[in-house]
Image 1 (cartoon, helix red, strand yellow):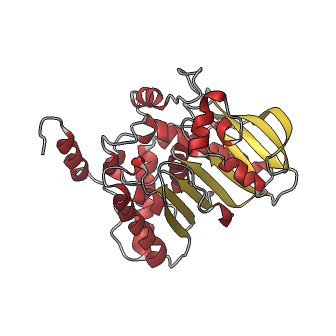
Image 2: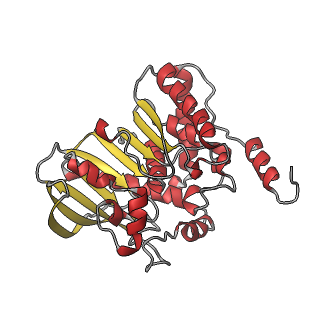
Image 3: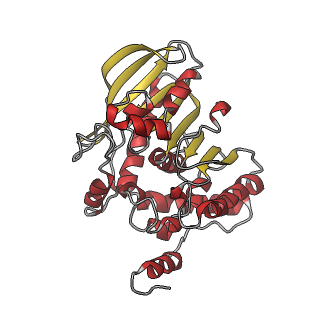
Length: 339
């Protein structure tokens, strides 16, 4: 035990402080009460009561006819959406000429030049990273006939106020520091903006009965929180982002998009995943992913067991699947053939 560097102090304090919203019930009635109370606390934590949406006023900026590597003809459209007063979100729409009319929201990781990397626009500076992490899931879904919506999240891609010349860099920490200084936070603003993207998808003219949201790493983070607070997401696929928040303390996940005031006091990520139940939830991670935190895969499995209990024992639903893949931090696509 080292009482000088502060690690043990922080680690123990984080557990003494919460989480308040740890589900300990055993019945559907208890779960429903817990869910309603936890959702309200999460929305307050994210500052939703201080955020006011505006009409999204979708403006089409570009439209290009393309052919995928698999030979599928599609149109790549670029829209600009208003999300909050003074804030706009660009979003690619990959629309196959022939498909099943199903819709998917694909959320990019860090280091992919925002939405560009996951739709196949790979700059020289990120070619090595794209090859290592393999985050082409927007194109994977396009090949399956999905219309895929791919936004730039705040702090990445074309939405970086600082590091505009570096496609690998995200400005999440600087933005979150600024937002927290005025009582808001980046994960809250991001989740709120993505709800506006879902509004757009619902009016675009595609089948939303089983709307899929999918993301790797930072995109997995955003998928988790969006599906937790928005019931319109019917299926969530999270890759490379499921762990104990406390397990990552001073080990990994230092980016500002991971933090909101009182987050650790209120929830851990198993609680966020439980909010998705009984909707479909797929989670994959690398067994050796350093983002798994201090306890590694064993710590992840503790959370998985809790989520699985809610799905199987509370709902008797076979809608939750988890896979620990053999390797490190990357997109595996272990469940992509489910769609």
